[in-house]
Image (tube, rainbow, N blue to C red):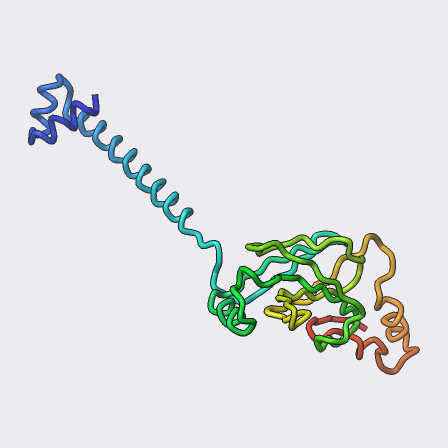
Length: 210
C-alpha cells in the first residue's frame, strides 16, 4: 500500500486525490506517510551508527603504554606508538620498523624509587610483529611492576620507547602486605618516623591514617 501512495505522490497528486484513487480517507494516507517517514529516519540513524563504528581507528597516534592488573599473577598491557616515532627509531637503527626486534621488558620495582636501572629483577618478552597488547603472566602477588615497550638489535640489548605506569598485583588473600608490619609499628608509637617511607615508589600515592 505505501508503495502505491508514494508512487502517486511522486506523480504530483495531492493527498485528497491519492485518497480518492485508493478509496481511503486522507487521515489514513497521512498516517501511512508518517509511519514510512519514521521508518526511513530509523534506517538513516542505523546507517550513521554503522558508518561511525567502521571509522574507529586501530591506533591513536600516541606514544603510551597502559598496564592493568588482571589477577595476583598477571597483568594486561596495551600500547600505541606513533608512526613518526617508528620512523625516527628506524632511522636511528638504520633498519625498517618491521624488521626491528620488539620486546616487552617487565621490571619488579617493589618498594623502590625506580630510576630505570635499579629494579630487583626484570625479564623480556619477544613480541610478534604488529602486536599492540599482551597478557604478562607468571608474576608474583603483592608486587609492583613497570613495563617497557622497546626494541633490540645487535648494537643495543634493549632500547626503551615507552614506559608504563607502575602497577601492583593484588594479594591472593588476607595475608600481610609488604608494608603492614612497619605501618603497625609506626602507628603504635614504636617508631618516630615511618621506616617504610624511603622505599615508597615515587610513582604512587599512598594515603595512610595514623
